[in-house]
Length: 178
Image (cartoon, rainbow, N blue to C red; front, top):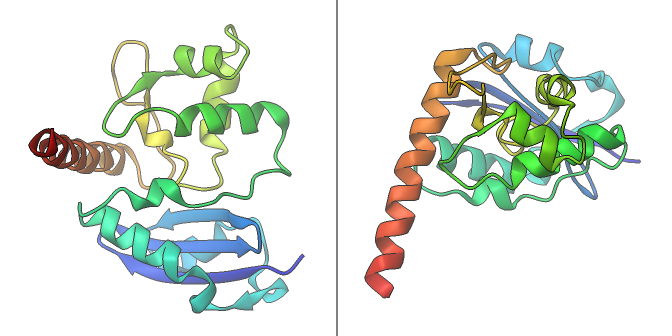
């Protein structure tokens, strides 16, 4: 399988992404380009630096982080090689509506294993496609923010605020057309 990558700065850090012909396979967000590249599961020498293959990803990430569009959540993901529960948890996570949050218990239930809330937490901790799999939407049952490996709780809070603004804009535009 041929893999391509790109790395670029964003308003909140450096984004590194790996793409296959089937979709976005991995993405990370870190404070420096070196940290972003090191956090990828792959060794970059194993595939091609091809920014053109990730142009739609870059455009979507930047416009999302600028609060302009939620196109990021329409990207095709390549997660078929992940463990079954992780796939289920990531798909459940993607189903959380823009600007809303759900608990780890909700995530476990919607992943098909209602009592596996710790495993759901692990699936979020092992989320290999940050932003596009919006693990920042998963919070504790008490409503508190918990862990976010792509920059800490400040970044998690920032992402939720971006989504709240996007949702408000989308809802406003929708109500004008009704």
